[in-house]
Image (cartoon, helix red, strand yellow):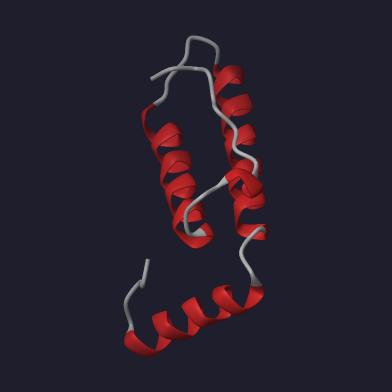
Length: 81
């Protein structure tokens, strides 16, 4: 895995913000579970950068879309992403 992280500005995303946030979260877990650099501080730094990116993406989701997604997940019992 490359140690260089490409950060995205939420305003540069062309797709659905909820899908992009989900993908970023999956990437964060993948880094956590599979990236083992020689210096443990490198992993901490990358995880911090990626977690900030995930939070930025989540903050970019319009409240109405976010609440609708939660309602659909609770009502149907499945993830709608």
